[in-house]
Length: 266
Image (cartoon, rainbow, N blue to C red; front, side):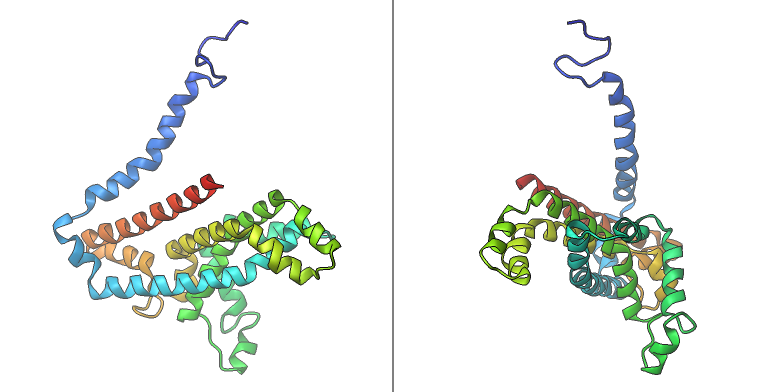
């Protein structure tokens, strides 16, 4: 059998693909190394434990946790409908779910403002009940949920499609109700997918910036999350911005390793 020039021995992978692949890897790695090189290690601990940094980190953790719980509450049923549902308009529904992934973050924030702002679609109705969403901590949670929900839905939908329905069919045949099948068979089977989706949603919420800034603003202790603090510190204290950026990078790396480890174990 004649092997074309450039193909690696024992593999169909052409060697020339290694060069662009290496350049792509550098495109990811160099900026991260740049962040590490900018960190003032002698002042790292004081920088990440200043009052403003601790307030931003605490707010980010609280709101990211709340938005992840909201993603689970809304996203699991959405994934079930997308994976197991069969009705007209299902493709359109999936496209709507994907929209936050491709929308510019600022546009997402403006869309939320148009829907829930004081003069938005639901603003007057919310005001009648004394509820104000924009530029509050609640707005941070809503913005983070808006951008994070697709990550959980898509991850879980893929798991549901590959999980198979044999056990569910057997349980239904034996007389189990749909709800009992869901809670006793389906959800335990896809629990790893739920966990992976929740971790991805949490990481996305923790790093959210554009929609949060547009919809919630930047008020210390109320709406100023860690990414917003990095943005502001970049103008006045680049060392603090580098230290806080490294914190976010470390969190992202931990999340990616956790998700990959979980999938690799399956």
